Image (cartoon, rainbow, N blue to C red; front, side, top):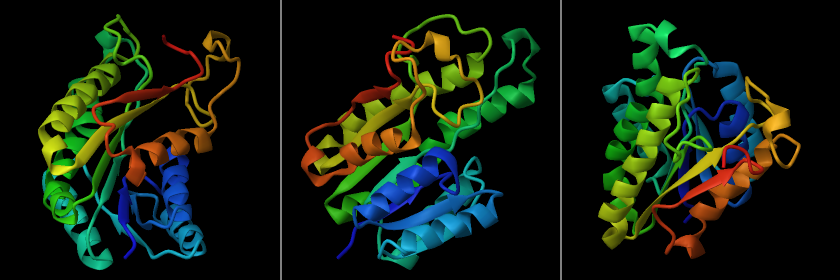
Length: 237
């Protein structure tokens, strides 16, 4: 029986690359979207052409009940859930003293609360399967406690995501469920592209990020948990 993977925010960008990489490895996949219905359907069709079952599912995962309903719907339609990739996460570049309460809340909701809601909902399915993988998408440099006045709420949420991931990894290890973080640096679809700051002198391509996720999802990676891999070409070290 094929394993099932849910990748949030997978209609386009990094999420799309991840969901297609997993489909290439034989995973049945759920393409999640919030507002990008057309792109989600295109990605779903691409995944299906790779010979797997592929569905699309809409939800605002910053809402706990919608996140729970999404996980339940995917498990019901595809017959379970073994892999959850928490990729959704808004980005805001704005001086911290100009950030509104609504913007602050949006950064925390999408980058930290949504992965919590989704993972909590997915745990019963992951536990039942005897094989569980959670991969959270972070941010290169979030482990370093440095001042980042232009992206403060975003980095706070991503640093919190690392602490959450490590804590959950320790808690779930006895069940054979792994929890890891893949932290992108500056990718080809990034809003800000400070190329001069990247030691390797180029942007990350989306397939490189997807391969890191794929590595953690593999069956023979079952002893790796609570780890953070930065796909960043030496940026933010």
